[in-house]
Length: 400
Image (cartoon, rainbow, N blue to C red; front, side, top):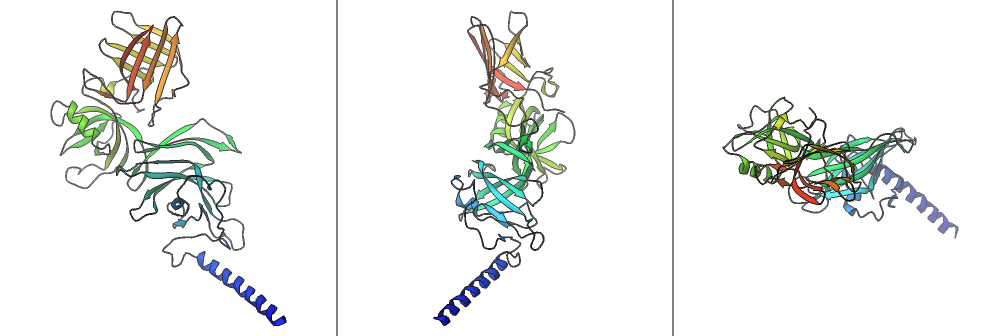
């Protein structure tokens, strides 16, 4: 009886000793090709709060993450806990995937959707850092982290979506759990193996076999153009030009990347990877356009009309009538913030009286002027005392 109890106690001690040695081996980076794995003793196999039932695929909860620490780290059930900075200390690097918000969409134009998630990182100090990570599905199965970028310290992301090959996020800065600033919009796209700022660029576009360039309105160096619109940009250019290599005014969204190798792109230090065509015109004011403070201008033909929105004032010009100005208010069903890169789906202003209502609605969808063939990013609908006028709309040019 005594010998049996002694054997069980010795076996238990050996089991504990072996587990400790095994945990120490798992926590090392040697022999893992620079991959750091969870250094907990023992490994916590429970799913962390906020991940269970989130709808994320299991591959995302057990994936390698690059771009945050010196080496790649391995998530386990959505979490990574590194070794303490000081032996026996409490401070250690921690990383956890957030179950919401999340998004999925094609970011590189290959026809396959990527996953976009947020990660929260802490190294034991007062800072809590939010990262944005993109994952692609491998042919052999599983997920691969293709890009990671810091969003900010102590920020709260309220919205995350993928649209037109871009990642759009809404965030507010927080301190002591309270918002400390106005909501911000940030937009990124995959470029040069990472996440680059996506922005509006306006200028004169030339697109052909030997020359694909954009000279920005604000000046500076001419950039080479890389089409990321799936053929929409070159197709629209060919349809509107009157001669090969004719400069057309264009407004696009894209990111600056390294210029490609090749004799045609030689001499260009940078290229613009265009993911969306917003506006294309052969006639008009082009870079000289000045809306005089107005956020939007709507234009129509048959009959010709124009409407400018400046704050809560709608300025109208109609054929056979003197210019008019009317007080309007934004309809809160739409989003009336100025267009930066990611466009709200609709802007709407209403005014007038019950007997003589007036409204202007701008919908974010491709609009082609029937007379000039010009391309615009918004479709316009103007209602005046029961009369409906259709047209297109544009926004003020990007700040120079």
